[in-house]
Length: 253
Image (cartoon, rainbow, N blue to C red; front, side):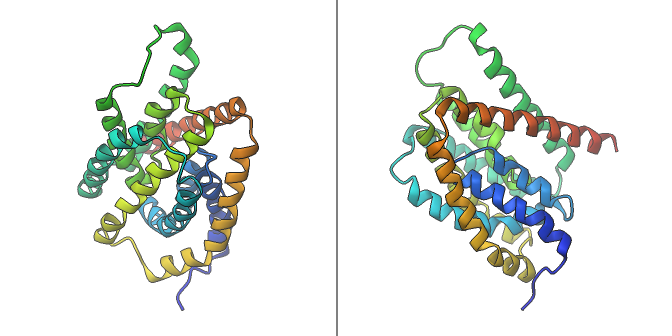
């Protein structure tokens, strides 16, 4: 049986899978560091493909747990855009700069944090945001999650300002990215990113993935709502800083 045996891989992969589990359990945001961690030791698209089977297993558990707690309107307006974004990433994977994508996502994350910090100075807008905005940010999330497995900042731009109840927010996020991950299976096969060693190694990490998934669900349930949102915003800010740094260094290098 072919499997990855490099100890350095597991030193990086284990915390990455735990972060994914916490995120898939509903403690959203922290999972965004998983692919950048693995990208330290392998090509980013290969890292994303290795994580995808783990994500799909975690998605199955999370969808079941949150099956009654999600916002259908958000998914209705964002998922069509996600289909477009995943398709565009499939077509453009060989032509886009990874550094440019990292810089773009980093700036989106920082812009979102700035908006959340300053929005009390802006005119109040009642009701839902416009549906076309949801479709656009859904497309951006689908595009970036396919290429670098980081789709949360564009998704958060549309969803975080709506300040859903924390379980509703967690469940809607789980449903959106479960659908997005399922959409990525065909593009990754077409791009030749799956390997026997990668799939076998992913299967080896399934128990850890499931255990950390349930830990994430527990954390969501016991964390006060204000603290939950504050922690999410801090994670988005830190990731935005790091992605922006990586993007600038990559473009200048």
